[in-house]
Length: 212
Ligand SMILES: C[S@@+](CC[C@H](N)C(=O)[O-])C[C@H]1O[C@@H](n2cnc3c(N)ncnc32)[C@H](O)[C@@H]1O
Image (cartoon, rainbow, N blue to C red):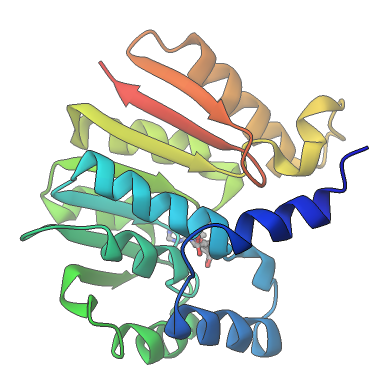
């Protein structure tokens, strides 16, 4: 019998540390913010950094900054003049985000936008090598459709939480708009011949898509 908690602890003790700044951010979020579980966290954060190391993207887009945890992780993996545009709709998060961004050595690799991603993305005037979709679950298909023309061929789109706590296995209640939207998104991606796709069973499920 596998003890998942023990295995998770073993994994975290055998990978790179998240570092003092991110550990402080994580503690601060758990003490002071609602829904701190939205943070990518130690394991997913190191994976995002590693993906950046491997892909060497020049332009990255994050939809849904929240605390900036994942943003700072991806920034660590960038090279040269690479830049992350990260968009957060909740202006109450700006002070929290800036508290940590301003202390990071990767600060100049991050451009924070406060506002609705649906309005901001077309105005960025950028083509992306890597996109991380991690905002309102009800809008995953809309974010995807909006961002797709701005992704280079050979670019990668990641979408977080696509297993939605396992709720994708059950018939959703008609009022559960988030689960319904995630199910629709997963089905849409399955049918999309313009991409190669795979689900990493990491945490709450990470869809990895490669644009043909
Ligand atoms: C799951 S959290 C992001 C977590 C972060 N990416 C991480 O990994 O640490 C989702 C965030 O998306 C934001 N959000 C929701 N709808 C949005 C939109 N239309 N545009 C930008 N941000 C949005 C929410 O306010 C919330 O802070």
